Picture 1 (tube, rainbow, N blue to C red):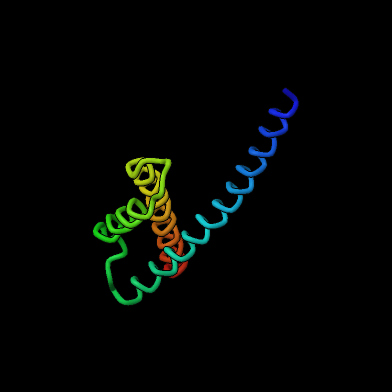
Picture 2: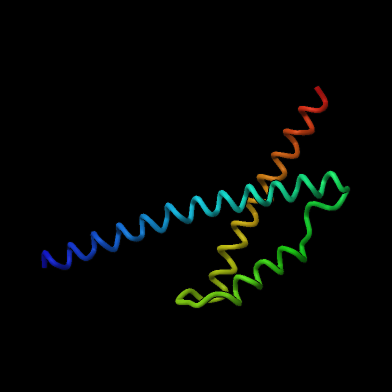
Length: 101
């Protein structure tokens, strides 16, 4: 039984390391999304492009080796995209308020 508890502990350590990496990558993704938003605003392009969001979700679904279903991966990415959009909106509002002062 002790061996099994050690296995659980090792697997949990691996999960914790994956989570740390995922957090870093998700934050880096948000930074890139914000930079794209800045460039689009400077060019007068729409920041929100639903077709692009659909393309991102389709891309991750296609590249999903499992065991999570394509639908599960899609739901996860919808949430990530929602947060990226929220961050962009807040950043845009912050920058607009800064220019108004």
